[in-house]
Image (cartoon, rainbow, N blue to C red; front, top):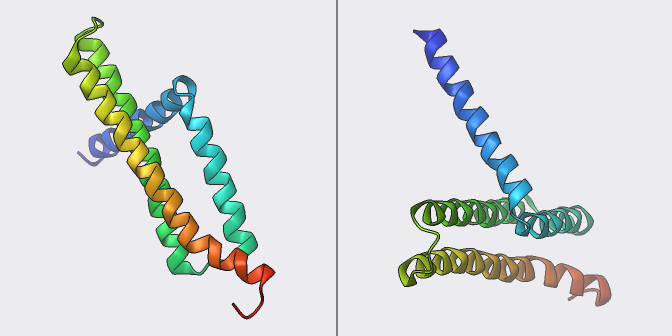
Length: 127
């Protein structure tokens, strides 16, 4: 019983990592997300963000990555249903892509709110 439970859990992780591998291989936007994830990590170290700010940044980065994965999944499901040009299929794909854009814009705003005062303080002490 426990063995079967552990096997199912191990398979869940295997499937999840397979999905992430697929996301990396087939979705070029993941390279952009990775670039910005690394840049934010570097900025966090350089500007010494506090733990609360770090938590917010980690959450928003995770949200962008998650939105990208869900967008990719939805696109594949739509393609599975039809490869024809259908207005509803296009709308579904566009809405999913729009959700990624919303999260990306939110992440930029959050990054600016956290990082701009710290960067400004480097150039204008006592700000």
